[in-house]
Image (cartoon, rainbow, N blue to C red; front, side, top):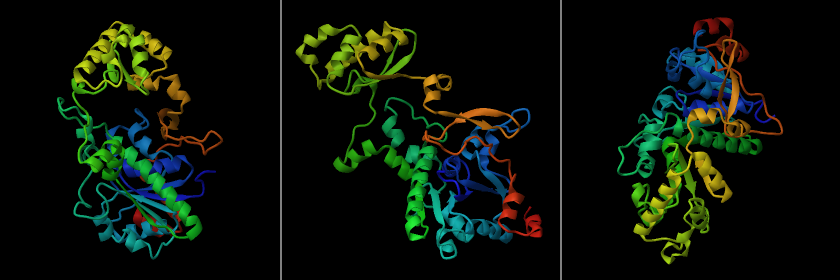
Length: 390
C-alpha cells in the first residue's frame, strides 16, 4: 500500500532533509534515520523526558522512523552506513557536498557500487558552484537570499525573519516529488539516479509569481506600503472587536459586492468608482471606506456579510484557533502520534491524505540510537561488529 516495501536511509539534520523522509515514512516507507553520537540538533529544542514526554519539534520531522547511531568519522561507521545503503532504495541527506565527498559518501563514489540507489541531496545553494558548501538555513537561503523577504516585507517596515521550518517544509515537498519521479523511472530502467533540491531553488519557485515578471521585464512591483497598494478592496481590514480579516477579489463584480457589504452602494453610481480603478487617490478613498465600514462590524458580522456576497475572505486566525478549528480537523490538518513514553499528542499532518486507504500514521520519533542494534542485525552485521560500533 502506497510506499510500503521501500527502504529509505536518511542521514540528515534540522528540517528540510528529515521532514522529506518523514513524509515518506507517513506514506509507508521504512525509514532509518542515521545520526551522529551527539544526535540531530533539533532534539535539543524541546525536552523529551518522562516529565515532558514527546518533543513536538523533533517528532514532527522524525515520527515513524527507526533511529541508528553511527560515527561516520570512523571507517567502521562508514562501512556500516554503506551496508545499509546497499540494501536501501533511497538515500536522503543534507550533509554538505564537500564533507560527503571527503568521506566517500557522495553520489559519484556510490553509484557504481549501488546502481539502483536513488540519492536525494538536499542542499542550500545546489551541489555545484562556489557556494555549494556555504552553510544555509531556510531563513537565510529560502527567505532572505531568494528575494522573498524583500518582496513580502513592506518597505516601511523593519525586516523580519520567517518562522522556523517555513522554507524547509516547501523544500521537503519538492524533495519528495523528485524522489517519487526517480522511483517511477527506476521501475522501467532498473537504475537509480541523483536528485537534488535546494533551499534557494525552492525559494525562487515559491516567489515565482514575482520572479517571473522580474525575469521577463527586468523589474517588478512587490509589497508596497498599505497606502500605495493598487486595490482598495484587497488585503487586511480591522473589525470593531479588534480582529483582522483578509479579502481577495476574484472578478470585476467583487467591487459591487464589497460596496454592498459595507453599506456604501451609493458609490456605484459614480463613474470614477467604476472598475478598474487606476487613480491612486481614488483607490485610497475606497480603502478608507472599507476601513470605516469594517470598523463598525464585529468579525462575525463582517463574515456574514461577505459570505452573503460570496466574496473570498478569511479571518487572520491564531495558531490556537487553528488547533481548535473543526474545519482544520475535518480537512485533515492534524494527526495523533505516540510520544515514546506511553502517551500520545496531536501533531501537524503531512499535506496530503488518501481517503481510500493509507498506512497508519502515528508512531513515535526514535530515541537517539534506539534501533541501532536491531537495524544493524537485520542488515547482516555480526554481533562483534555491532558491539564495536556501539
